[in-house]
Image (cartoon, rainbow, N blue to C red; front, top):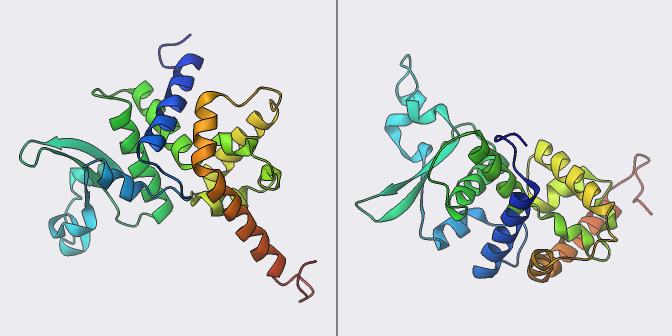
Length: 219
């Protein structure tokens, strides 16, 4: 196996870490409020839009700050003794901001202290799993979401691309329903199951009330 490939064992470890993280902070509502979670962890979120020297509109004709070369990063502030998550929120849709914060949270809870392709892959996977846990597709009544990436996007408040990726992961897990729910899946589903079912019901109600192409309500 390539050193730049996450092993199957590591994927399972990451999923377990995510489940334990959600349990530690008693997260029970969807979509996951990653901004509040970061604050609960003791992190400080610093947005680029809150720093006038970084705003390109305040400095027309000058080069953008190197700080704006990435969506975000985290560092430890010796003065405040806190982890600071920097978020480049200029022209960034809220769902992309949510993923960026989730990505930085992932770096922290996975204990990343170095940089590299495999580290970023792990953080990307953990962020995606945190925002849209695949285990929820095992719950009764979840089949309605399996063929509807738009519903996945709405329920989990993720980008269109992330929704399609989540849909692919749901489809894969759905093929193996014969495999019993494992410990970390049970933990996640017990925490988020009620909220997930509520969101699906809300989505069904909205779709049922939406006018059809003929102007009548859908049956």
